[in-house]
Image 1 (spheres, helix red, strand yellow):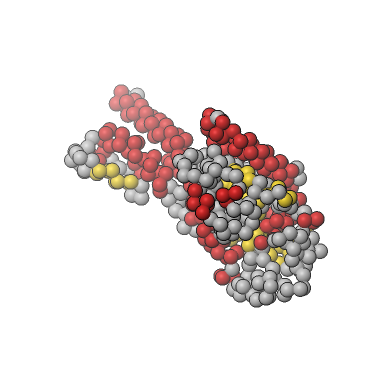
Image 2 (cartoon, one colour):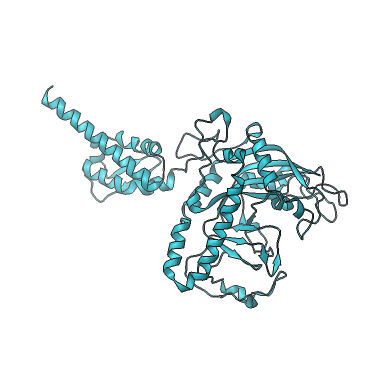
Length: 431
């Protein structure tokens, strides 16, 4: 083989090696799939060295524009500049990859403008039914401040759909990435020593309680399979929900009123059309913690439950007052929720708008807030109220014992884009 040919072949091999190494590095740092990175880098190979050296800028459509002071740019220098800048551009413009089992996801890594609701009743109804059965406490239904109206004792799953919303998924995944890994947060709390000792212990108790509930669920074969296979026709491709356990991502329940829900006292229909119902709003725009009431048990935020019978309390009432709830059809979202490091509380937190810091400091403005209808005023709760710059907890977990009284259920509160309404379950309330 001629020397020139050997040299050319060696150069091509070196170039290919460099491109592959760069793709590996970018994929690792940006938590993206390697093939998505490769599709972006492909644009680089289509721009010749002569074009680069004859212009005062380097342009890759849809990715980045790098301007330099020099009119003449050497090709090697241009590649160095690109390597330094491409990671930031990838993170800002490449969209997070949707789950592999979604049917409407885009092949384009720069595109997330898609939305569909896919019926998966045939694949998941039996599994979701068992999940509902395992998380229903019959003895706790029909009692308490939020559930005294209920006359039903069980649920029958009618339909399961999967909400595939590209833009909501992008917002959720990007927010999830910004939440610290739970163990990393706890290690930082350990280093703080005494100021964080009490909160660290309560956080460990909260994480153990959460793990216990989800381990109990996974004891059932079909529910365990739900976390590993979501569509029979693609069983070899779909390995799991890919929950981010390092950031304490869980599958949790959220009940919401749908079309036809009535005012519990007057019987007036509150949402006469599908488009005006909270269920429709969640499917379209996701959860919005800004709509939460500060008069809730744990303040403003998006509330979730680890039990279906708790979420059912907030799914609306549909029969006329006095006719009971048996036969009503309601909706619960089975949602991805990234709890991160939770703050465990044993007292009500009305008027709260965000979690306390890891040393247990709550916002100072709560000191002057006397508009509390549940529990004691903030200045009497025995918690520090101050302005601080410490790291904050990611969520709030209300335990069974609140303000000296035993509750039937735990509740969880998250904020901003910490949740995604992946599965929408329509069910019937049964005797």
